[in-house]
Amino acid sequence: MEENKQILFIVNPVAGNLNKDQLITEVKKNIAKTGSECELYKTCGKEDAAKINSLIARLRPSRVIIAGGDGTIKMAAEILAKLDIALGIIPAGSANGLAFNLGLTILPLFRQIEIALGENFKKIDVLGINGEYCLHMSDFGVNAELIKNYHQSNIHGKFGYLLHSIPTLIRSKYPFEFEINTEKASFKKKGILLAFANFQKYGTGANINPHGKPDDGIFEIIVFKEFDILEIFKTLRNEDNLDPEFAEIIQATHAKVRCYSPVAFQIDGEYIGEKEEIEVTIIPKKLKIAVPIN
Figure 1 (cartoon, rainbow, N blue to C red):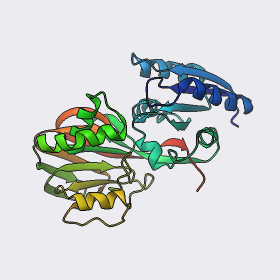
Figure 2: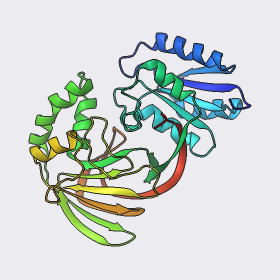
Figure 3: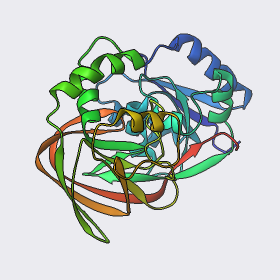
Figure 4: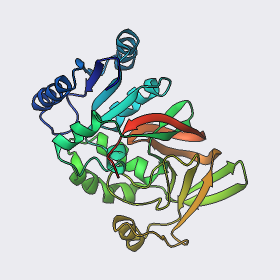
C-alpha cells in the first residue's frame, strides 16, 4: 500500500439501486484491512466539485474510490486528472458506461471492492470537449435526445431507455448535417448520430467502436448514417465489423465539428444541451484507474 494511508471514499447516495449503507460498511471494512483510514464524502448536488477539491487538497489521499455512476466519476476525474492519484470505481449509478467498458459491472461487489483497492492500474486517455472531460463516449443526435427524455422521466434503468426509444425516434428531426475538420482532413457528413469514442461500448452494451482503445492516444469519430435495426443488433452482439453503409469510423487526435442547426449533445450519459460547434482533443494517459487483471 502507498505511504499515505488516507483514502477518500465518495458516494452518490441517490444514484442507482444499490443499498448505500451496506456498501459503505463493506468498503470501510475492506479499507481498514489495508491499514488505511477512510474519509467518507456523500455528494449532495451542491458545490460537490469544490468540496471534493478541498478534501483532496487537505487529505492528499493515496487513492479516491467512487461509488456512483458516470456523472460522479467524471466530476472527480476532472480534479484527479491534474494529480497522480489513483481512482477506484464501484459502479453504483443509473449509468455505468465507464465501469462497463472496464469489465467491472459483471463482477460481484466483493471483487469490485478488491479491484478498487488493488494495485493493478491503467492510465487512460481523456477527451477534452469544449473545456469538459469525456471519459468514454459523447455524441450528437438521437442518443443525446434519448438521454434528455430519459432524465426527464421517472422510469429509469434499461427499461426506461427502451420505453423512450420509439417516441424519441418518431420526434427526432434526423438526419443531421455535420462539418468535421480533423488534423488530417475535412468531411461533410449526414446521419442520425455522430459519436466521439474513447472506449468501445455504450453502457447499454452496444459495441459501436470495435477496435477502439482507451490508451492509444487517438479517439474515433463514428458517423451513423441511417437507422438500421439489423446493424444495431450487430453492435449488441459485439460483432467486429459494421457495414460501412451504416457506420463510418474516422480516427483523430483533434477535431472541430459544426452542425448546420443546433443538435442535442451528451457527454458520458449527461445531456449538455443543443450545440452547434464543439472542439474535441485527446489528452493521452491522463487518468489512473484501478482495473481488473486481464
